Length: 238
Image 1 (cartoon, rainbow, N blue to C red):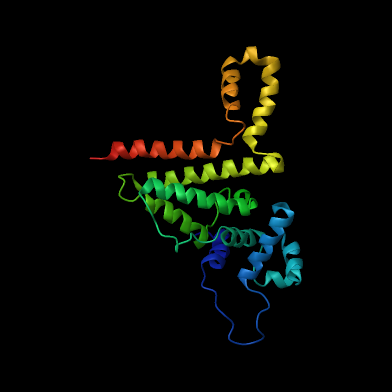
Image 2: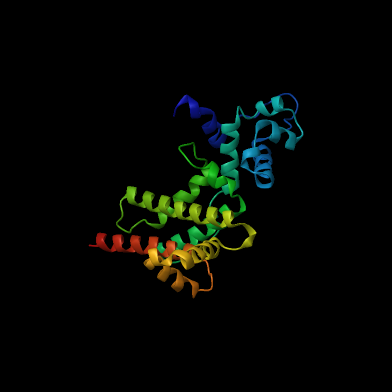
């Protein structure tokens, strides 16, 4: 692990030595992460800073630096706390397909509560134990299917990407309605004026309009991903 990531690894994975002497610490990592989450949830991820989180905790920025060396490490703590560990108390039912469908629905619910975490989690970074437990569960669901380790990892990443894309689209649509209905309305107006140039799209939109604007992108994408995995698993079968 590079020196650049050493502090994030220590904060996320420990060990966290406790002082044996002196006054009891005013803060701990869990409180700091929660304060950052509160700022991101209420004000937006762009407003998260060491200064703002310190103010949320009622301490000085210098006091916060005693626990977290910088914003990158703060964000790493926030992401892992916001996503949390996969709910291991939940019993696993069904085969790999049922397990992954349930997994994706649960992840979507978590992502919807902390939309900023999807943005913050992009790119190479140190992953914490909570977030990693979700990846563990998805990969484990595909055990015994004949897929290679790399293919099982790729399947999990593909599902995460679907969750991210649909959740972000829904957030962008705002309270006015689902993104599919809004896009359909905009395109419908354009096709009325220019439909002769785009006959395939005009026909598809007319068919989609019969669903009365129902947002089907989430279900359609999820099941097509699972269908593709099923076809690949069938190829691997002896």
